[in-house]
Image (tube, rainbow, N blue to C red):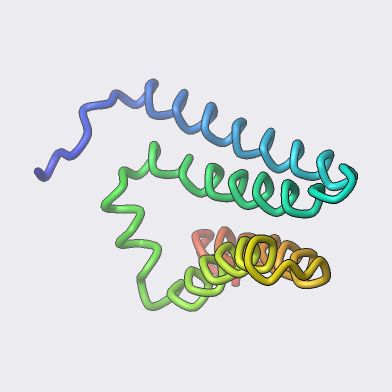
Length: 127
């Protein structure tokens, strides 16, 4: 249980790069799908959010899942984590249930800034 993964460092780096590249590709694809008539905004919200989730998930390869979760909810980055996760959920809610285009764009912008704030929280003295 203590050694949750048996992946070597090289495999972890490859997994990180692959997952991060998939995240970037999904975000880029979502931006391209924004211009599709009628369903474009929903597709944008879904792919952009999936891209951000994959990008966050890529760090699981480097640290391991349990260490990543523990560090996400440390007191110094708790607010950044909660805001980021809330923006991810609200983006999808505004696209699927509320169907408000303005809210989708607002939450995607907030999602971007929340993810940047969350990422900066891992750099010592960057905040």
